[in-house]
Length: 450
Image (cartoon, rainbow, N blue to C red; front, side, top):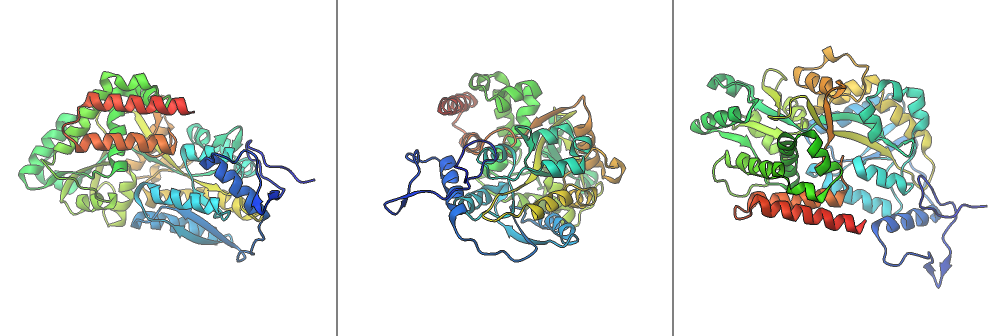
């Protein structure tokens, strides 16, 4: 007897859909949501005749398209190839993964998902509920994940007591990079406090150098904002704002200070017109000494190294002022997606390879991230990576999830907050209090829709 469709965790329909009048007949598919669309697509895909995939190929969809990201993906491909499985690349360009997520959704809706995809944070757990990801409990047990991986990492990839993705690396969002050669030439100290940031900006402007590599692109503004929010609000209030998403908390004075600090940061460069530069452009400005500082995730470190800047020589890194002992994190994960034909063996092999020590070292060294494992030798890391890894490993440190990078909120919430904050930055007539009220109202509306 075949199984009927379900909506529970990791359910997968085994029966083809009944048809009525030549159309798919599925009760309850009126007023279709994306969730229901996915379930319908999964059901339809199971009934289609599938074409045999080329032997030993493994399609991976991701948004690693910059120089350093390509190098890190190549490290995974090489590790997988050594096990006799060929990485079939399906990269989708676009900062922050916005375009990749859209393409991936369309592939899933068409019943043709890749073998693995960069699905992270809240999106990952949502898709697990739809039965779209392969559980990796066996891989985790054989690889002793619960013994060798950080507990926070395990929390991110665990849903309803199942391991649902292969964690690859940990990024630190509250990172401030500075051009070490430029700072040394001008006699500037590493910018560890906001007054030191301002003093450095003044000296840099006097030299005709852009103090801060900045982009008004929504996801980049949101990335800076969440780091500043952690600085001004502290970890406890940050959790109320970002994880619990309490609407009233967004009216707190600390949010007003964070918004003022955000606008202050943009103003360090003077009265610039709107500029939506790609994040790699900002990295290149820093590398070429056309900008002195860059406030972004530590993936920028990987790109600097790809451009030939040696860690601890060409650039330096500090945490965003006010966030010492805190780790605002985003964790790269690859989900193994359920398709028309079983491919569990290759998917489990890939998860095993990607989380092993050799691949972890190789991938994170060029990505700018740090391994998800607690059993590495931190002495092999450069100073920036070592501080990130040590802070994440420290039981007394504050680890908080990124909003802008899908760790703490779903796609719609992330996008709504990013859009409001971007509008605030670009419109001087908008006050912080007006923006706070808008943020609170949006979160309140989203809560009522759940």
